[in-house]
Image 1 (tube, rainbow, N blue to C red):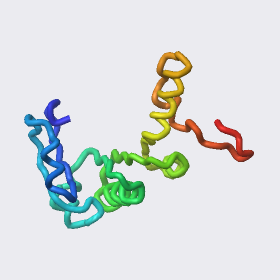
Image 2: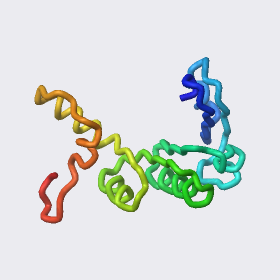
Image 3: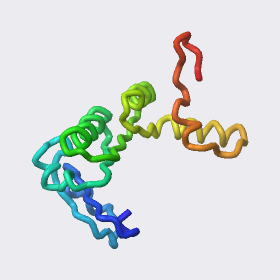
Length: 136
């Protein structure tokens, strides 16, 4: 997004992680915890159009997007969630989630079965069970 001219700020607890950014990354880098209100203020989340949480922890991602949405009034928030059931539950509560586990499983299934890749929304509920325990 920074290549497209958007102002981007990345927050990471480990400053060594910033070395993986592309050399032409032009945004801000803040070392800190994304669920720390002071860190979010330093990142100027209150001025953000969007907030995305992509740590390795589902709980941290959910908490940080809720803080961005409720405390800082960020209109567009998205959380990466690994657990399909959690992703679906949070999406039902109005928090936009992307479950890379579901997407990956759906893409792998399509590849194995020789099908064309579907729309991302087709994979959103991949592997979830309905009330009667059947896969959807």
